[in-house]
Image (cartoon, rainbow, N blue to C red; front, side, top):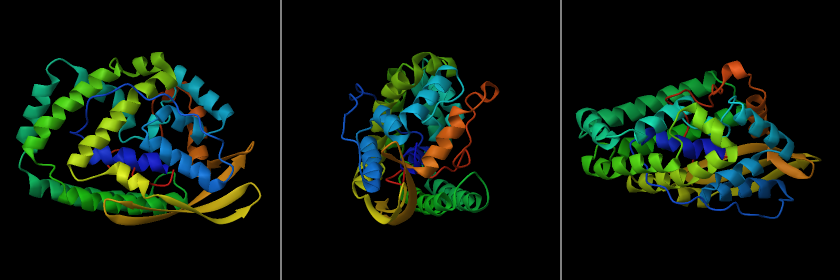
Amino acid sequence: MTSIARATAALTLLAALMAAGCQRAPAPVVEPTPTEPTQAVEQLIRDLRRNDLVSYSRHAVPPELHARLDLAWKEGRTRWPLTDLPLDDRLPAFIDALSAPGAEKQLLTVYQRQFSGANAELRSAAATLGLFATQYLRREGDYSDEERAHYVQLVGAISRWAQKAPLGDVQLARQAIPSLVAGARHTGLAGGPERFRQLGMQRSLEHMGPFFERMKRVLLAYGLDIDADLATARATLLERDGDRARIRLDYTLAGQAIQAELTVERRDGHWYLTDALRHAEVEAARPAAASGKAPKVLPPAAKAPLAPAAP
């Protein structure tokens, strides 16, 4: 996923107790090939607003690279673009735990014991997490300068949102936890990493798309409207030199104005985000010994939220 996807996905980390049941995944939408750099970015944003992860994966990288990523997925070497989700290496175990018999009761018991009414503690944790993530982004990780500048803004906006969100509201949790459990069961992805490998990239993403959409709905109950934020995204061409260009992406995340500069490049007539291509190439070449262990765009507990961030 691009930074757009990274940002939106990370929002789920700070509200991990909320997500909803799934619906059938939408059929991939066929769109004209973007002929301008800004159009390529806008296309990725539309994919995320539609929760169409299948189309997103095809629009994010060239067909040849997509085919290599598909093969790597089938061989259990990557789960791109899910590798950009928070704690992506634990995603199969997370789905399994949510799908287990009695998961609703167990999770609610844990929530009531550790988080119910703990608003002050949760606010403090959100502030600490935001500070840690910002420090990490400025010094560590495989990021370009553009990514670092962008993600620092994302982390700040989400940290401020989390400090105000009613994450300790037990009534909201009582609605969200059963929805999260039902949604996980509906994905049909329980069974560990092998299940993801068996289904392959396209079918797995088809199953995750509705889950992604329901997460956004539950986050809305906590005051975070991801689709509305994605709708504010505006891409502006700054400069273009042959097959390379620079774009400014402006949007609002959790009430905070975000501005990012992105580099895009043209391959075989199509425009792609340069950083997204770089990360995808790493995933396509990942050896079998490193199966499922993708380089984190953010540390496990501090990935930036994916609002309309730059892809």
